[in-house]
Length: 321
Image (cartoon, rainbow, N blue to C red):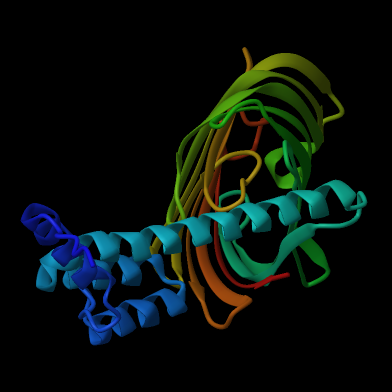
């Protein structure tokens, strides 16, 4: 019988491979460490997973490749979940009717005014917004009204509609139609139409900043009976800052109060109008907040006998729906 001899070099090469294939070989990553990583992954919290992975790699450098494999699988799974969720969201928007997907805020409270009128009264506001894939629609209405001893001493109304079309990631086009009435500022009605472009400079969960500009057409019907129609320009800035969770600072300088904070000036050859609103909003419950705000309305050319600047301090409750 012939005995075959295995070369020594081949035997030496085969030994490590056999050891790796042995079912009794110790795993490179200790089971307690793997269990810790699996527990972090089960939470779905990406920040927590990164922290645990960094600690695991620091204490088990020889198992870095295996740890990276676990993290890569988690990252891929989360990306797939986000992709599916985004597809479902877009499909729901495409299938929605014109009256679907509206969200809003209702606001009611009291105010104290100075300027053309010095009173304490009541105020109400309604904001509606519909977010689409490329289009965003915003409807706003607010009213300030007071009647004392049978005499109306504060009466101001505003309603507006603003559609926006997202041209690119940060660039958008806007349109604006607005109606105002404020007899104590000297006009029964003022209509404004504008269209232009805007840019989203910052968009984060805690901070939002956008600017816009465009031509405008403004028609005013004064309490004196005169009418005036002029070409104008519009400059706008939207600003929102969530200081901490549940506490938001808003800055509105506008004729049309944007969602959160804004700054808008409409100017023509005769009159420049400016409305400055500064607010601090604190959440009381999931949908209920309280808001403190101070507003200043300025007319560069007020009607005879009228003051060019009015102020208004509000304390309101805000309900989101």
